[in-house]
Image (cartoon, rainbow, N blue to C red):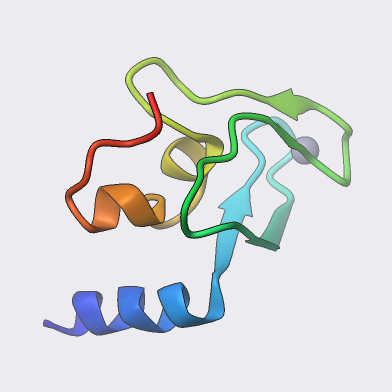
Length: 78
Ligand SMILES: [Zn+2]
């Protein structure tokens, strides 16, 4: 499955594209593979993003792929 391969590549590089819901600014953010990032500040409009309800981290809510613990079917850092 090509999607899984894509995730593996991302996991290796640990860069996760996130898009700001406020201004649409997109940036590739590096994230740790063993922890979640709960807050994320957009570098364009300075809005502080928090995860949507039910999501464990900003990468699950605003990134294009879920965070590594979710990818590995582990429960996240909650
Ligand atoms: Zn923004």
